[in-house]
Length: 406
Image 1 (spheres, rainbow, N blue to C red):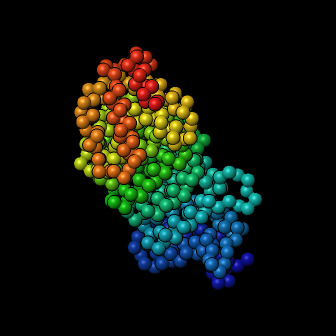
Image 2: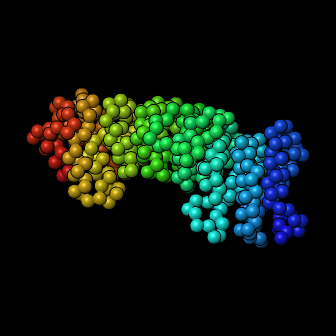
Image 3: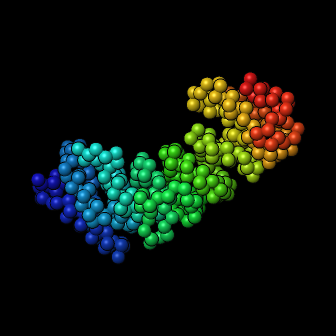
């Protein structure tokens, strides 16, 4: 069968894939040669037409399947991921389109949960994903690599590769079969490089890297919850030091907002309880309340309120549609650490003066106003001295808890 994209001239997918690979090698050896870039652009355009089709001509599943097999045979995905930064703008766009279509392509009769290319990558060539992540090291490749990564991250096995790979540049990346979820990470793998790409990259690189970073941390909740629990100290140390306290306003604000989302996600309940058990985390939250930028204050408030068990219980009860009895379980569980209680008690008077006037111009935000009033009430009801977690606070402590439920 003649392929539609070459006006009747028959070319096999294996020939197309081989030609693209050869031209990529020439571009890498001698960047900037116009004739080579032009030839490569034509080949990539043909591949894009094969996987995407046109308004006049639909794609053929048989042709796409043959192309996928050829791409795997030639290791073309890895070469494209590694060399995308060297391509002209239009060729980078075509590569992005090719990747996205191939990643989600499933043969008509396939019964596997994941597309064949996804399975191939995680079991045989995870370096493809690692190289795509490293695309954030270059402004030219950041956005197309980010779009490809977010397409791939629809599958939890791809998120697992990014989270658990600890390979250095030039080393083999981790295969899915070698993944050991219970081992604490070294902090040197590709996932940990996102902190630097977000904090030190140009605006475009930082913004796209953060979008992918957020996708990694929020899409596959069970996977991420276990990862954060295992790597709690390392993750939140870097998150707070690099992102929450970033000099970039955009990075700082987005990071605080994402922190609140992570902590208030019911799947991360154990992670949240560990986070609010730290006096240092509470100090950071209180520092955010005093920032001179209102949106930083606002996002910081939503993290600060997590330190109160009653608000946490009510939030989960409201967001998850749980019953009041479920909420009372949270409220009646006095699990704030002594360190956290001591900080709150020592700063009670300051907080009671500060919070009523805090962002008082947000008069149209009824939920914020209610939450702030509720928070003030909880501070008023704090005991005079810290109470060891799990030990009853006596009549005054019981009254505080009952008032919180009411």
